[in-house]
Amino acid sequence: MTVAALLEAARAKGVMLATAESCTGGMLSAALTDLPGSSAMFDRAFVTYTNAAKMQMLGVQAATLQAHGAVSEEVAAEMALGALARAEADIALSITGIAGPGGSEHKPEGRVCFGVAGKTGVTTETVDFGPLGRDAVRAAARDHALALLQTAVGSVSGGS
Image (cartoon, rainbow, N blue to C red):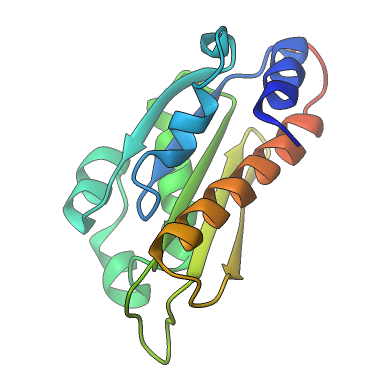
């Protein structure tokens, strides 16, 4: 899957995208805007690295952060839904994770949670990329997110 293929599919279906990123710090939105014409599919990005930014910019609930931590599917869901509500987009994807170094036994380095929100609701998943090192975890998370967007765009009925 390439960004060019994603751009073509989104254009063909009239789908706009938004992102909410934490551990990737804008890498996904950068990848989505690498190609000329990407404004036909990409509305905006939220880079919410701190918990305060997640709450202020995306409406993530303090109770969710306290109960589950920033690296959780619950927070990924709220990030994606918050981005969708605040953007002119049909699909919003969120990423929150532990790129490293570090982590804990409960939340190890390389764990990344994703959320995809659209008109039919939100889905989440967690991927443990392992302790690949900060750069490799972030790149793997970006690439996985692009694949999730490709699937989400592919599932949209034409002419949204």
